[in-house]
Length: 109
Image (cartoon, rainbow, N blue to C red; front, side, top):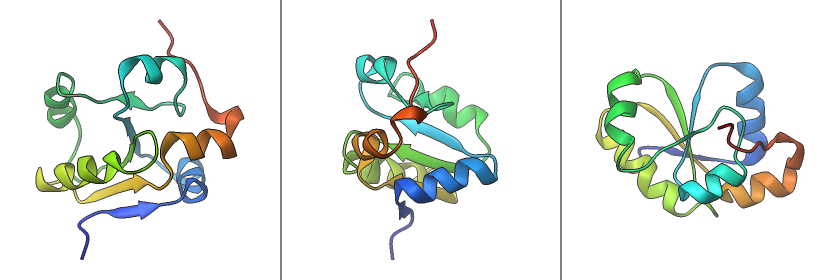
C-alpha cells in the first residue's frame, strides 16, 4: 500500500475549492517563478526545515513536480517525516497548466 495518494488535476481543483491544503512545488526555482499553481510554495532542500517546522503533521499536502514522477518520491519522504495527508499530483504541473492555464500565476517579487 502506498503511504500517499496520487490525485488528478481535477481532484486538486476540487480540493482547492473545498478546503485548506498546502501545495508544495518541487520544480526548480526558475520554473516555479515563471508559473505555478496559486498559493503554492516552492520546496527544496533549503526551505524544507522551515516547512517541516511550520506545517502541522495532519495538514493536507499536495506535492507538484514537472510531470508527476519526482513528486511521488517527495510525497513518500513527507510521509516518512510523519505527515498523514500527502498527495502527489498525477501529470505534474505540465498537465495542470494544460488543463487550467487560467489557474497559474507568476511569482510575486
